[in-house]
Image 1 (cartoon, rainbow, N blue to C red):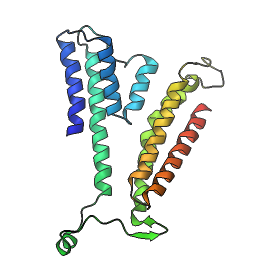
Image 2: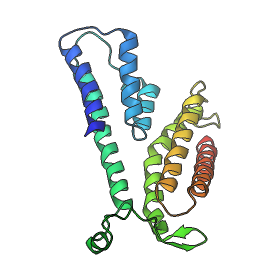
Image 3: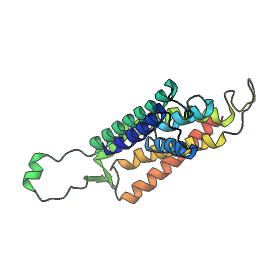
Image 4: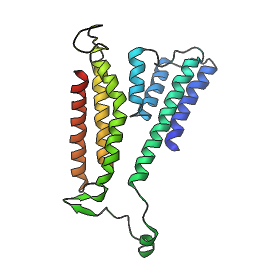
Length: 219
């Protein structure tokens, strides 16, 4: 609820100032948009990038509240709800409650570390079967945007509409975001101990995923 209250407050400020025709300073509007994008990462990355590329869903201009502006802000609010639901689902799936019998036998016991089965690997490793595919699914919109940002709609071969330059930084940003998404999916599951080993594997997997996706979308 605390997380959702911040995007709701930002959207409320933007809608109220727009409906009352109170022109915000350009810097204030820019920071509002940046705050919304950061708060709704990773699902907002592709949404923001598409608006930047096509200049149709970007931050609405000041001077009155238009229907497109309302849809734009409500879109970010919907992304915040999706983000909160996804993270809540992940946390609840990983942190299962302790059985009542265990708490009755040891009421003052601290939460136990998952039982290690083989070379530091725990039984929670099976959770990777759904966290990693979920991360790949969340990465698809960013890869689509990256494919357009590298060289344009015609690709880097130069055919069709030709090569479009100047948005390579956006493709790199989308690749980094996707690498972070996969690294988070691998690290958030307590499938390997010690934690530093899991962190290193998550970092390596995220880096490889980002580089591989960048190479594929650039081709």
